[in-house]
Image 1 (tube, rainbow, N blue to C red):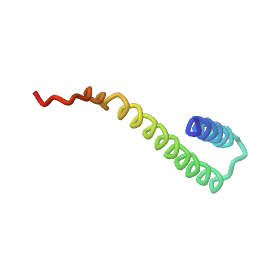
Image 2 (image 1 turned 180 degrees about the vertical axis):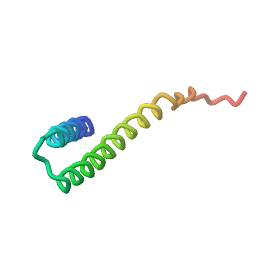
Image 3 (image 1 turned 30 degrees about the horizontal axis):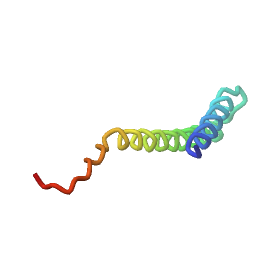
Length: 73
């Protein structure tokens, strides 16, 4: 599943961003940029998770096709 791999990569990237944010020698401009990157990555993660959830809901809500019959009544 491609979205699963992408989701895993984004989560890894977000983890790296948070690790950098914990660095003591981080300057204010760097911190601001990292927070912005974290927000973008989190938005991407949320979008993928929403798409996956929507696909699952659509599959569960789709009723099975009625049996075919030549008779009208």
